[in-house]
Structure formats: C-alpha cells, structure tokens
Length: 139
Image (cartoon, rainbow, N blue to C red; front, side, top):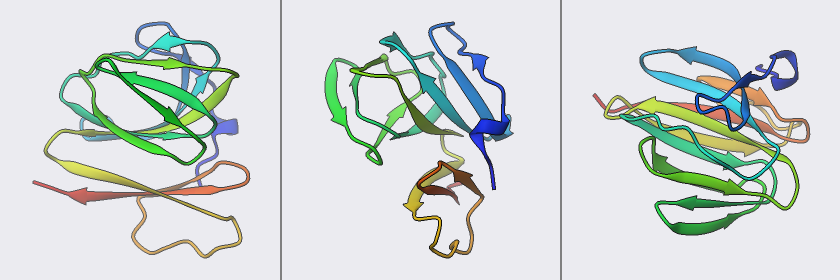
C-alpha cells in the first residue's frame, strides 16, 4: 500500500506546485499525488499520457477546454497538452502517467473496507478511499 503522507513533496518540473512520487518505472510509468495549493499551469511531459483523478473540487483547463471536477472524477490528457488548474481551495490529485503506446492506466476508487481487486499494479491510501491502479499493456 502506497501512502502519500510517507513521501516528501518535491517541486514540479515547472516549479508551480509540488508532487509526491509514490512509485515509478521511470521510462514506462509513474504514480504520484500532487499537492494543489493555488492556481497553476501544469508541467509538460511530451510523449506521456496522463490520467488525472481529482481528490477534491477543482477546475482543469486543457487546451482551452474547461472541465469542473469533483472528488473521484477523472480526466485523460496528453502530457504535451496545455493544462492549468483553478482552485477555490487547496486540494490534491492522483496522477498516473504512462509512456504513450505502452500502457493504458485505469484508477478504481474503493472504500478501505472493500477487498483489494486482483491485478492492481499498486494501491494508494487516500484516507477515506483507496485508489487501485491498473495498467493494460498496449505494445
């Protein structure tokens, strides 16, 4: 079980926020929890597909398209897309990044009292929920 509170935050690539890298195979995939403290642009990750799971209410703008997300809502976008977050209050987000063409990520949220499903790459302790992360091989 991965626990974000046990990992020190590090600055984003662009310096506009912080993240806690929970697990990674650096050339293939990465699981992290971002601390979203203020409105900010996201860092670019060309060649990477991102699955973003909101852990609180927020607004994402991806290539000019605005999407309001609530806790548990997910959005997929390319790492080279122009993305920014707008917040009414600080929150967090779970990010699963995969090398384009290698994997497709899925995140399933469940209660801590529910049994962990078979085949998860990792499980993340989010307090009132557990996030199970699955990768499907594409290549």
